[in-house]
Length: 412
Image (cartoon, rainbow, N blue to C red):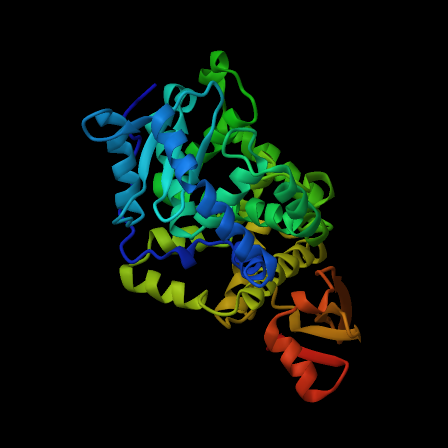
């Protein structure tokens, strides 16, 4: 099923993966690299199964090239051009009756797309899917995504039982959590490729299970309404929801509506427009903003969401109004003066070392209430493990030998 691209997306000169990579993707990835047994086990498994994995794909799938499938290849090349991918992975078409696409490979990467997806998706939607998969390639996900493919597989390329048991009882939950967070990064890459939220919503509607016979009736606005309802339900305890793993402990992908909500938040905060409307120089500068410690960047990301949700509740304002303002003060040291949040005089983040393994996080707001300033405390339900805290905070606790550290986030 093909149709012309509904609009001509622009090439994003100067784009670097750091611009769209989700902070939790990078933070968890950095933790995985520090697990003593994991790099060795992953490296050994990939060395053993590299040839089998590649031969399975090459022998049972169709290689998409400019000569073999020119129309599909043209969409792929367009995605590569938009995202500035100069050495794209080989693209394969797999015979699969379900919607599926994946990126694997050791050394050399391969992207595979199911025949059902190519048959049912138009060029706009396929551009999003291929952009998403290129996101995995650009963010350096290949190694661990290939290992998960081996870990979860039921084919000749599956890991033996002992290796699976060892993985499942040690680091698998963290590995699968990273896999779900990595999808958020690549949803952003897919949006940057197709440059149409409506297209993304259409794809997600199809992934939700809409049958082919009703495709013409699909309304992207309906999914947006469902996404907004989801966000409202989790807004009161956003962080707890974000870190919850009980219901998805061994899921490789987040729930579809959760993905839609996460992407919607990224757009609302203004990151998408800044990239699309920017210049090569501004995109390079934006990448430098995210080049720091992954744990610190993850904490900042969580703070932006948490402070936004608090302001939405306290001031009864829409998130679309609040989120860009909070993003501005947290990332660009802006001011709340002249905004609908100017009653906020001060925001502090308090770190309390409860014991040698536990850190508690609290947000303190000072809010102008007429003739008085009211102090309000909000618990930030971050993971409290000492090792999950940013290294700069842990170092400061060691240096100061104190149990409380106060970090000023904003002041008039």
